[in-house]
Structure formats: C-alpha cells, structure tokens
Image 1 (tube, one colour):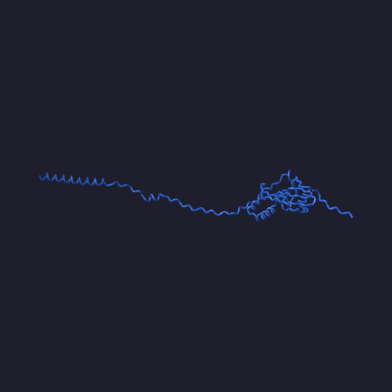
Image 2 (tube, rainbow, N blue to C red; image 1 turned 135 degrees about the vertical axis):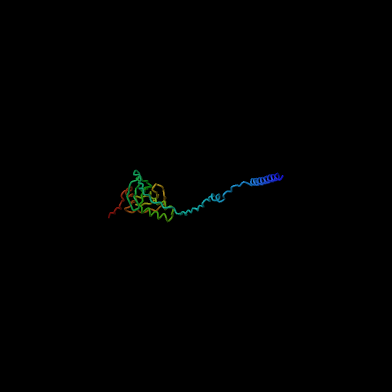
Length: 211
C-alpha cells in the first residue's frame, strides 16, 4: 500500500509540474510580439532642409543714356551724278547739287552736302546738349548735313532756307526750316562765294563814271 501511495504522489507531482510549465508557456504566447520601433534619429536626419537663397541685389540703373561712340566707318560720299565736290573748310568737306532751282528773277536756290569734321561734330554736340541731353547722345553719330540757301545774284546776298542733320546711316537727326530770314552779304572766298560765282557768273564791278 505504501508503495502505491508513493507512486501516486509522484504522478501528482509530475502533473502539477507539467501544468505549471504549460501555464508558463501559455503566458509567454499571450504576450504581444515585439514590434521593431523606427529609429527616430535616422528618420529626422534623412529630412534635408533646403538652403535659403540670399536675395539678388540688382544695382540701380542710371537714367542717363549710354554714350554711343562715333562710328569708325568712312563717311557716306554723295552720289557723283547728283553732287559735285566744292571744297574743304574748317567745318567739313562740301559738295553742291548740280541742279539748281530758280526761286525768282535773279534768285536761285542751291543745295550743299557737307561731311562734317570731328571738331565740328563735337561743337554741335555741346550746343545740342545745352537744350536736350538725350538728343545730344544721338549726335555722337552726326556725319553730314544738307543745306539749302537762296542766292541773290544781282545784289551778292544770300539767306539760309533749310538745314537737315544726318547720322552715318542716313537717318535724320534734326531739321530746321527758316522763313523770312534776313538777307546777308556773301563773304568773299567762302563756299557761298564760290557757288555764286559758278551759278551767277563773275561779280560785276561797278563802272567808273566818266569825267
């Protein structure tokens, strides 16, 4: 009997131990599986902050227009079928139109074409600058002018009727018209004097009165 009781006690102890082990195993299964956590530091470091651009500073532009340098190309020589060379003066090389217009009896209208010198161009620029700075910039390309004068052959007088300034490309820079301009005596040994002699003939000297 004692041996039977001892065997039963062993079985009970084994059952208790197995039950305890099963409880431990079941307790382990009930626990939530571990979820891997994201590395916050790695995520934050992956975000790149865009660089802040400095504002571009644009310097203020000057209201005064840029100066255009005089052209280096040779001057426009007028058509030889229309114009004939007259001569050179301090202000430029002058040509005259072969065709003249008779305004009235003894009065003719003559056109001249003058290629201005550098000094005359600079002088004209300074004169224009006093009235209009912007226009004076355009006169950096002032190359020639065309002028119309009336010549009174009989009285050896002249008066200007029109003057037009041109740039190197033939564009008009400015034009002046004169109405009711006063007659002036033609200076001796000038371009106007040469034109008078060419189209009016030699100047008649006053005849000496006979005693």
